[in-house]
Amino acid sequence: MTSSTSDTRFDADVIIVGGGPIGLTTACALGHHGVDCLLIEQRHDVKEWSRANNLWARPQELLASIGVRDAIAANAYAITQVNTLLNGRVVDPVAIADVPSPYGPVLYSGQDVIERTLAEQARAKGARIEQGRKLTGFVQDDDGVTLTIVDVSDDDETKVAGTERTMRCRYMIGADGAKGFVRRELGLDFVPDKLPNCMNRQVDAKLSWRRSTDFDHLWFFYYPRGFCGVLPVWGGYHRLFFLADDTGIPDRDPTLEEMQAIAREVTQDETLTLTDPIWLTHSRFQHGASAHYAKGRVLLVGDAGHLSLPAGGQGMNSGFHDAIGVAWRLAMMLAGTGDPVLLDSYDHERGGEHRRLDAQQVRGFQNSVYRGRVKDTVIDVAARFLPNIGTLIQGSADLQQLTVGYPDSPISEDHLGSVRDLLSRHAPKAGERAPDAKLVAADGASTTLFAQLYNPDGQSWGWTLLAFDGRNPDAMPTLRKAIATVASWEWVRPRLVLGASVPEADDAMTLSDLDGEAHTAYGIYDEAALVLVRPDGHIAFRGRADRPDLLLAYCKRVFADSNDMPTTTIAKAG
Image (tube, rainbow, N blue to C red; front, side):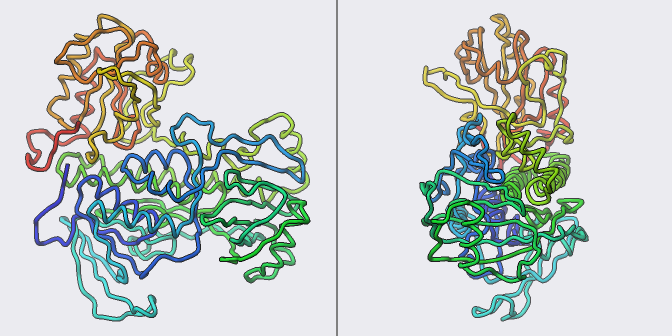
């Protein structure tokens, strides 16, 4: 599917301002969906130090959905275990990769490596990237956004080196970071909350100690004055950071000798040695999230809408959700196939999630840095009985972000809620992530639901209608009628998930579930049901198969009228 326009009034359908990991991912996603996009970035090249560097399971799923995850993984370490020590006492390790996702191991690389990889992928998908360009203003109107930009000096990116010129697009995306221009100009800025009496000191260097250096483990040390992390950075380096009470600590970047001394004390390893440092830095912390992530035709992604705390390494990862979520919506709007409620739902979902995450990260800081003797005692006792205390201290038991969901979104609709849902292991509701499950295709080959959900045609923003027979051998007439109600929206891909029924040759694509793995994963047992899944793998709609009128009403509310859609911009979705 493509929304690319030949309208000469526009320099691009979408212009992205900012070329960090999230801006580049947005360009990859838009290119994947066939959208004509241009990214402008003030820097001439990436910063060489790594900064954000980890990818959790759910963001990896989203990156896989647009075909860029494997390229990043090729230059990343796969982490399978998190080791935690609380005031010198070992807590049960967390098998972080043991989650229901094909991407359980956490990827650790470097932000510089990630940015270069994403830039290559974005260009390969047709996105244009112009570096050395600075946004100085923008104005919205009913049809688009007019940007004023200027070139910057080759020698100093903060200095202007040319005259201003204008560019025009249908939509603009602000991806210019926490101190960026776009959020302020939209009137969506906020006063950040400052964390008092706390400093982070950090070094990226070669590490030698009496623990493993195999780049497949993380270590977290909770010590009386704060919290230390030891984690890999691409290229054979490790990062050591110390979030701690700042009493008596000089307000400057640390020396290598100072970092080695505190590292030996905290890890209780006098042999620990740091060499060949590539980055020594210090920082203090502010946090907050914008009240909105969109205003008119301008949308925010990643740090452009929030200031994130480093608790749990969630900041960049949350931005990947933004990039994927905004891209498929804009692709549909530009193709004329989506109702405005689709775009409205982006602000509701992602703005709300960033505000929730902000509160979670504050809890993580309170547990890891602002502990005190009483809290330390309570945590120490709890650690003897709770095997997952390490992740709970971080403020969340779901660092992998698999539980991120949007049950209150204007495009989440559920008609299956019942006592049976409460009694089942867990039936994922509308707004939640659609789980994976093993199935058998019509040709007898093994497959998975993920292979059907995430753009199996390689580029489209298609939706998937899972039609479960409820293990009822007589369900096919009901399922055929339900599928027929959405036939006019050709990007809705029907998939029959059959535990007992036998299809005919001209039925929709069939996936056999005779062992009930998919039915169980979705909490569907003895009643045929319909589950509509969005392009980003979240459940949009759940309903009974014998009530296709509810599904029809949902599609009419969320999709454009099929009679009004342009016929030249829509390709059949698998």
